[in-house]
Length: 503
Image (cartoon, rainbow, N blue to C red):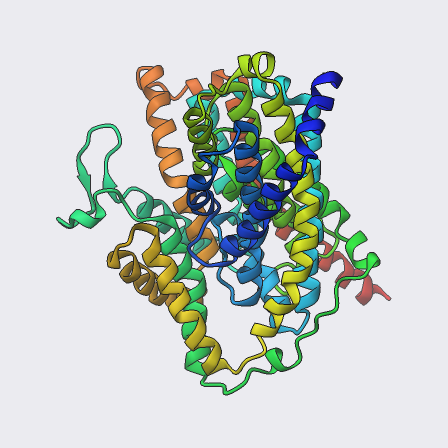
């Protein structure tokens, strides 16, 4: 392994490799920061430029784009409340709040530094235990994936502190949106209303942009503020070492969760970042600050979505299985270059996977440098007056939505869910829970139905398989924990009140 790693270093530190990684990282940050340009789209746009390259260089360039796009998506999440990628959605909850409080530099700095730490952690894990972790992923079948997704869905119990019922309703709404379109098993149309545009279902990004970005823009427009106070008092000051150290627990949780869920094919950053946010809040000493501008609330999901990139390379390289849209594009790039991803690649063409390991590590440090120079110009954009800001952002949002499929229907979806998001926020429902339901919907349905086909309709399959059973138990614990915690807090307050009266 040492010899192969040295071979990878030899390939990755050439000026050609460093140049393509830098290009990939720069474009990834820019692309990820544009609402609607996801990591997969950024890589897809970069793909034609890799055709004349060697396979190792092509993969390093795409990996640099992938790594940086995950970070770049956090920039609009913090500045305008519109996550650039679905895995950045949890960052809105605290990152945007910090921006409104004038702590923009701290939010963006935490996102950059902690995201880099999460990415480096995942690459180290990838280098050390790539093949054993691939075997763990192989142990998961449809029952395990269903139980895992169900556990992820119960995260809404912790995300929605004010009303669990409204949170569950919001998640159920997301599940409903997920089943619109063609039934993946029977081919029947569901809830399409006869519209051919809905045959393939609703795209995640337009829905996400509508619920988060457009709804917030509508709220800003409704206020009719000429120049928001928090834009006038924006600080570019980065977080102190003490503040970064206070997020160490959240960073650790995010790094581990992101790497783990990145390894699971088809799960990815969307679920990993929500799980990380939920667990960071659960274990935090200052959980009451979450949703109100907590640096931990920024650190956990940003560490997770950046850590996903390293984990996602395990099924791609070791198994030849694309764990996400982005890694599917990378596999396509390898196939175009005549390379078959899988276990044999480590023996027959070791320079490809090992140069990728080194290249991804270099990309993390490049992202730190390039991101630093991008942050201050990005903050300055937010100092413009509200009408000017709206005039800039609205076209970007709609152009980004249209660019997904070159279809005006997606723009209509953005507007519709912008109004839906506005109403949800007004009446206390949870857009993040809806997004989580939408992300997990198809995943839950397909794995549930496959599991029932395997067991001839028996639900015992979920109890007979240890991994699935553990995930279901975790789901029950996650769902009941808020009630238990609330009961304990009431008892503690009651005891304190009695003790005070006795004195």
